[in-house]
Image (tube, rainbow, N blue to C red):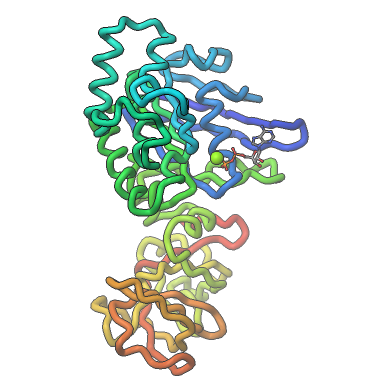
Length: 372
Ligand SMILES: Nc1ncnc2c1ncn2[C@@H]1O[C@H](COP(=O)(O)OP(=O)(O)O)[C@@H](O)[C@H]1O
Ligand SMILES: [Mg+2]
């Protein structure tokens, strides 16, 4: 068991370009931390630096109390699982799982017991004598997990381990993996570009973005519990990245008394969470963010609101339990969620929409930060 601390960590593969800039955070002993961000933002790089597979250009990485910058990967007491399972094709499942223990010279009895326990845990007992090519994708993934579990490491590092699985298996395995971590209580860092995995698996989420050329930008945009990240995104990047469909954004202005937001051709009362900030920024431009679940059709919503706008239907996506509808309002696109599309007017015809204004998000257009 171990905590992980990154202190002002930077990484440049070439002198000109920083891939990781000024990254600092603590992962607690036993915590399941998810790193989420778009492809290319440096998630694998961070994980590989923690593993010791990549050097650190600046800053320090600690595992427990020990600075590990110069510690060899095999001496860091970690186990890593990759998207490509990297199994040995000529070895049986048993030998694939046992291999790492054999080279560490554990006793035969100890190895046998550990492989048996891991196989039980992962439902692999009946496949131990098979070769990887005779397994399904999900079973191969379990073998890769088994290889990590038997090591009984202080830290698990997962780099998009479910990305190669089909959708159904991915949903199943993400629940299995989360349960396994809760049981083993091994400190875990899990990297994914999938925001649903991020929301559902971890105790906390760190949202990363490419750090770009701006020297003042770090890759870390926000760190918090899944619901903190979803309910109070700290900036436009996090707000736009987490949530499907993407949060609606529009340019807006605060009224001169700071009590209303002028957007979509109407005046929306400022949500209580922003009362103080809106008073300080009265009369100024802001960016208004609304999640689709806070935009509905007047004929079916059950929340009270006197914020109505008129729009036209542009696109309807029935999902079964709900319907996503993309409207046009005042020349802007606005997505909403409806229970049914039975009462929707045909495309181009007007419909009255209701906005749950107390669930609004306000951002500063210059800094892109949440008004607070
Ligand atoms: N060995 C390398 N040499 C040079 N550039 C690299 C190397 N590995 C990754 N990069 C670059 O670093 C950036 C981050 O890559 P990576 O950490 O793999 O991102 P992610 O895992 O978030 O998709 C990318 O722009 C990538 O091209
Ligand atoms: Mg990657």
